[in-house]
Image (cartoon, rainbow over all chains, first blue to last red; front, side, top):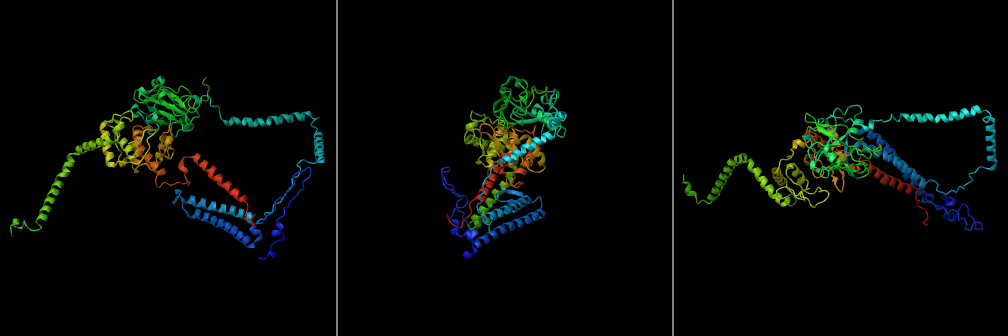
Length: 352
Length: 269
């Protein structure tokens, strides 16, 4: 390639001077504006072969993208949706998901990478300075706008026709009320619903696993059982709302090891039933450690001591887990002797 | 025909006598041995208990007491049952290396025969859960979906919803259930090792336990498939978010830096 092919301004001799505004130091500006540094040309600007190479790389990336898109369509058609495949670092994964993700990712990436490579090597990279201009409008324009506004206000007769003005203000004030009224749809107030659960005197404790009422002999020391009130079935309407309040965690502690007097009174031969809902923000809490009788909440690490009235021994929870008073009915099944004494879950109410 | 005695100096005579003697002994053993075994099952059992007691005195007595009554260093083993021994020793947790918040799983140094002898001895101290059979924890007749339901109700709070494990209080933790022998999972549910509560058959039936094991095998087994690709430990949105913020965003920043980076110039400066 001879030097005739290169445009005049790209020759090395023309590159070494600064361009843009170049100022001179004077009294007002003690430091002269140095202007922009001299523009340096890329290999592609001076070497046509390098430019050709860049062009080919960009075209290659776009072509790979096209092939990847075809691959995407082909894998969508060809790969059965339940085929499993082993890919080394990941393990057994779904072949179709993997193929679709890989091809679509490649197709998109190659378009982006090609465009960036094109811009970096072939598009013009000459720095261009665009001087700032004042944002403020000129004095005449501002005066004109003010005059127009006053003229418009006068012509609208808003100052003279007071009835129109006042009713307009009234209408504009009332319109936002419709937005406020819509908030009513956030639901009926909970009223007493949060204060009561399905538990009541005589309700049997039903094992969540077997759906059978529990007998005292079923509950061994060191075991953990979850119970729901008798009559509440999984497919009932509102099951989730009810179980969210009534969920019960049953453990058995040697009566000698129960430190809290009321807890012992409300237990049956050491079988104690506590609410499964954390009193902090209502997470289901049942990480029970059978040797320490501690229960840990997985959300914020509140820890309760089930051998001491479910007292809070760590974490942000504000009060002990509510205990359900239980006994045994004539047929030998565990039953509730009433509802929880206090609302279960987060302490939304004032406890004084 | 020559008399038999005439051949007693034959070079092969000694060999013939030896073979006869061996056949005789073998025949007698074959005739009597099965009968012995049939009538002496109890003897074998008490032999296992004796052997177990010897192993116990060496490996366990220092913490659990000479007769399994327990000491300040270890709980009583009366009534824990063979299942507890099979679990604790079979997973290498016992004998414990050192006291601490929790005894970790480690390499098992006992053979299955020795574990059975130890289990026989501990079971003889007081009745407890027995070692489950293959039919009890095997995959036949198990309902995976029901097992998932039961797992999420009873186990997921500590062990994570796919059994990856999780942290508890004061250095204790729920271990991962990945790669744990189904038999040991069954025994753990039955006996409640360390701080894990037990789930006896009265509240979690044998069929329920089988379902849970089948569920774990479906989500955590050798062949189970991860539909979403990289699992990132399977511990939920926290790990995924962290990965997204650090690696996802990090890659984007790196690409942005590369896009705006100085390109190669024709003239070195």
